Image (cartoon, rainbow, N blue to C red; front, top):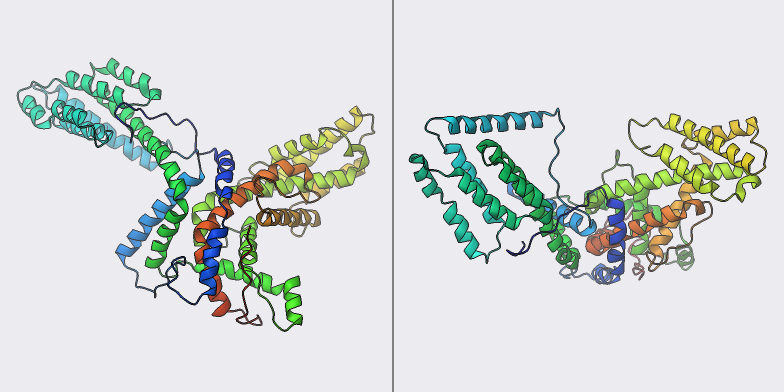
Length: 527
């Protein structure tokens, strides 16, 4: 809360600035390595002592009660809100904007109109009645008092004296209420509390003093804006403190949910189990050498978890529920996944163009950027259910052929032959068909690039080299890689004790069949 002489700064950014905020928080999250958390978890993993303080407690399943469900719901709301404040530097609260023809808006408008009509009717009586007006003054007084910090005793006393409801009721009985005088005082107090961006709004309130109903409407409208400003100012104040304690806070909140909720980690367990089975099904060099000695080695926890994170790039949100530990990042993961799939499609199209046309366009400056921009614009929104993808790909192929012919003729090269254009258009239109070799190749190289991003130390500062075929989307994919690593590193720091406990249970209690049993677990790789 601001001091009495301190006014909250306005919040002009919007929640839609996710990409920039993700980039800003990348340095913050990546600068704190997750090795210390994994070190604690490694000790817990290798130790048989279940009382180790670094591991989440594992209590027997409990019967779910309504109170437990409500408490878990509150913890999840607080966890989600805190996580959003920490991860999204532009996060702030906005006024709800109800759809114009929605039932909720219609009901709200009807109720509000009925109230204001009733107020106007009371004030027009002879003598006037002030029942509803006094109720509004009481609500205004509570809002003004909520703006004060605990030490503002003098101003608190003044507000309570001027807006003394008992005195106002007595004045109403004698038809001696000075509504305009009270409104003038309220507006003067609002001017002290409002953010600079609201100064003009508060000044305009004095223009409606002659119309009591309109005056009250406008006062409440501006008070609602001021409450939002206060909430956003509080968020700005809390953000640095939350960031300092983010890992411990989120881990504690999630632990409380796990303790109250049976099977709270089922989806997380299935996610890690699938990653473990995938690695066990494809023996690595270390496993092969270990098998020769008769002591097969299991994949390290880092390998298991990194493989699991990479699977999120192709996660089917319609068929599979995200792991519980990633629910707070669901929106960010979906947006990253959609942007990545768009880039993969654009990269596949560019590979087709340059492999089909070859030499004449390989050295033309700026052509790749123009084609990339053209394809990206035409395919924007390709994940929307209403998006006509075949038609969009057809448009992309036509526009690309047109741009290629224009560029080639302008550079003293012959235009593309009709049969080559037909081949090029056909390949572009079939790019997203199942098992398309070019698209599969690009997808595999993107996955490898993101895997290198996860395993390379300080990759947010010095990204790994881009594999062949992805050079034309290097700037865009580099940003997505940094955002992905930022998200993963923070998730590891918070939830690594839970992951290690799950992996320990999978290896030593529920190993897949035909897998090595109870062999030493490789330590987590330090990054």
